[in-house]
Length: 232
Image (tube, rainbow, N blue to C red):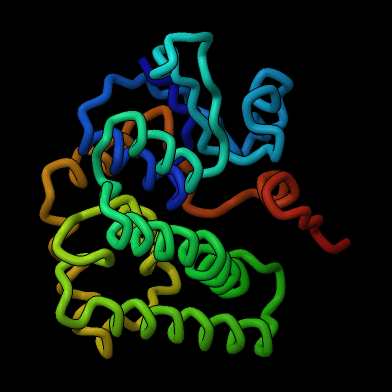
């Protein structure tokens, strides 16, 4: 039913988390971003911003032609509405879920991504950038921790697409782990999501040999991913 164009990154994990929770049948199509496959015309036809993940739904609810969706937040919202799951129907629950989904898209993901770039991938050490994004990433983790005080999940008692959006971005860089020790509520929430069987299945997708990645990016991969060219 669903074609998932995927490479194992935090944004792609969001989508497999939801697909595995819903049980929707899906087929994974690798998009090797280190090899530049995100720039192929057939991929740009469904994801014009040359970023994955993207999906094609061959059985949309209106019964019409296949529907393609790009941007991970939009995909989560589309699939939640398609299945009627993980997005509360009541006004307040839906509003809270969408608030925290968009918070992740606008803040947690981009800022943690910049933290990772300057701590892991940048060709030179820039202390200002490292410190600026480390502070911002920790600030956002604090926001999340305070939100989770007295709540099982971001929108309340129910696990939603907001939780799925945030979970992969908590500390995604093995070489530059974020300090979660001050955030007890966040750690409890993270452990609860990690214990879900669907979470294990979602992350197992990344273990497919098709997604094997080198321990270090080559100069060509850095050029493709970040526009970084080696110094002469």
